[in-house]
Image 1 (cartoon, rainbow, N blue to C red):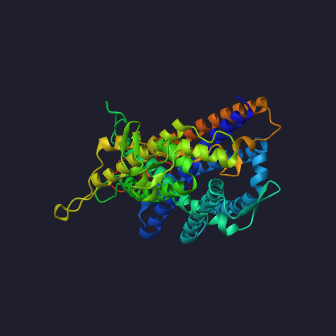
Image 2: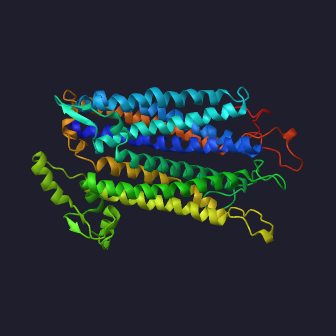
Image 3: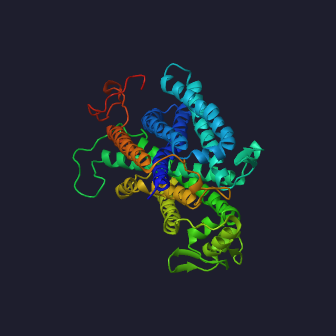
Length: 489
């Protein structure tokens, strides 16, 4: 093992860790903004309580994402100076737009939203949150546009060994970026939807005095002002339904943009497509491999070129062509990782979307002639919601591994190889020390994040004072009666 191997491990570990928070921040921000919009339009108090509750979870995750993202930038100078030298003139524009426009828009208006409760007019306060949400999505766009340029470089020329941008618009409208951005953002909504579904499922079980795993009851049921009396809405069912809708719609977008991405891989990154399918040789009417030994004839050609008879290039034949074009080298990525990442992404993503569709069916309203009442959430389904929390996270992480490892051994497709990107003066010991430090630091941060999220979810939403509660409600538990009359943070 040399410095290059450890530098790749370090960047991979920190990137995957950072990517745990980014999708949840993007999707959860939109979800919270939707809840506050519903409160402003309807005036129903349970929407405000949900806004406050999930807003805190959003802020905890946002703060952790910012902290872990800073480390990414330092690595470009520490371990990847040759890469930074090559791409700096191209990446300067989109990353500057991300920092100066998107991030400042996001952070400024998020600060106004945090401290603006009961200080700003309701519509202005809501607009601040939507501005912050737009900023986070713009930030994702600029970063993904830069990432897409590494996979399909456009709008540039190489001068004195460095890439020089010739067309900013071409970089920002790169077809790879236009497919990748909605795919990743929609995947972020699936992750956030899965997170909310799990939280709502847990709260439903808790209020019924049930455990997440089947067994004896936990004791007395907790009634967080959820269904205190006839006519008062079940806010956890409301939050669950909203998340189920968001997940189902986002899943459809992920599937559509994934199909477009597959066509682009066929044209721009054939090695990644071949590695994802374990296809060794150029094949007309290429089959889709579900698992090794189980294939669907012609399906890969149909998905990648919309032609069941189209020829899909194979790993070994691409290797020979690349060796002739770029010189002798190993141009094949890690086949097992790419192959299985693709399948984990598909299976776990489909399972999450399937869970949302099942939930929408189970919680649908009864027929009008039966009063149109809402169906209760089955206990077994609430448990399933909690246990399914890792599925969307594993799916989007696997998709990111497929995207980045499948591009190897290139950092910039066809222009710069990973072996030529590492800093020349960095030693194995130096990278090992920083890798160990970052791993320990990130482990501590993960523990802190987990503790904060779990404590907040277990505590539940802030409740109105008992003296203001409607007649017939069950008094709030002492550890949950924390809300002031103005519902302030």
